[in-house]
Length: 394
Image 1 (cartoon, one colour):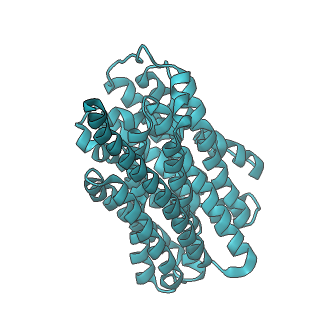
Image 2 (image 1 turned 45 degrees about the vertical axis):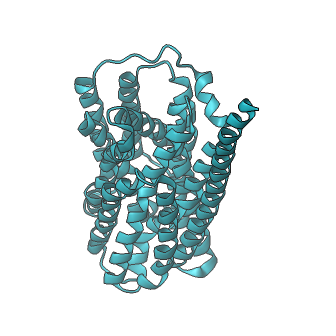
Image 3 (image 1 turned 60 degrees about the vertical axis):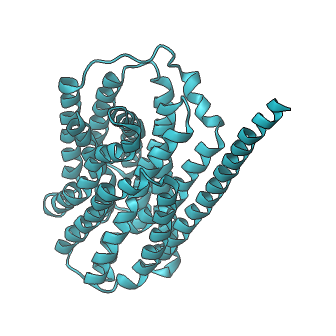
C-alpha cells in the first residue's frame, strides 16, 4: 500500500518540479519569455491552493480508497491535456487543472500512512509517503528534463500521465475497502479554520518554503547562463537537489518525532543560510551542486509541518492535511513570482538566492510567533492544573 501511494507522490513530484526544469523549453515553444513562463508554475500552485480545501471538505463522506483513485484519474487527465497545450493560455488552464487534486491526494495519503503506525512514528510514516515525491526529484525530474532536450518538453507530461494511471490502478487493486467515519461531515472539517495554530502552521509553509521554489524554478537557466555549464549537465544538478530532499526526508523526521517544532525552526534557519550562499555558489559547478543538495535538505520542512497540523487540527484532520499542500503551493506561486520580479528588474539570476533567504526568514518569524503562543498556552494550562487542587481544598 505504501508503495502504491509513493507512486502517486512520484507522479506529482515529477510534474511539479520537472515543469520548472522544462521552463526554458516550453517558453520557447509557446513564444513567451521565461519570467512569463514562470506563471505556468504559479498556475499549477494556485490549482493546489484552490483544490485542496474544496476537495477535502466536499469529499468528507467519500471512502479514502475511492477518493485516492479519483484524484489520480483527474491528475492523469490534466497532465495528458498539458502535453497537448497549443498556446500559453491553454497551458495555464491545464496546469491549474493539474494542481487541483495534488493537495487532497497527499493529505489523504498522509493520514492513511500515519494511522498505520504508533503516534511516536507519525512523521516517519508521512515521510515514507512523500518519499515518492523526493525520489522523483532524483529520477523523474532529470528524466523529464532529458526528454525535454531530446524529443520535446511535452513528453515529460506524458510520463506523468502514465505514472498517475499506474497509481490509480495499484490503489484499486491493493488498497482495502473502507468507509468514512459516521461523524464525518464537511462542517466538521471546516472547524480546522477556527484554530489560530492551524493558520500559523500554514503560514510557516506558505512563506518559509517559498525560498526553495524561488531558486529551483530558475536553476536550469542559472546553471547555463551564470555557471556556464552545458545543458546536458543540468539534469545532474537537478538530481543532486533530489538527493538532498530524499536524505532530508529519510533522516530529519527521526528528530522531528522527538522535537517537532524545534526541528521546523532549525530547518528554516538552515534554509535561510544555504539560500543566501547560493548567490556566491552559482559561479562554480561544484559549489552550486553542494549548495543545491543543502537547499534540498530543507525540503523536509513539508513533512514536519504535515505532522504539526495533525497535532493542532483536532477532528478536522483531512482539511488540515490537505491545506498543508495548499500552503506549500502558495510558496510555489510566491517564490517564482518574487524571483521572477528580481530577475526582470535586472538583479540577475542569482538574485533568487537573496529572495529565497528572505522568505525563509519570514517563515522563521511566523514560526517564532506560533512557538511563543504555544508556550504561553502550555504555561496557562499548567497554572490551571496547579490552581485547581488548591481551590478544591479551600
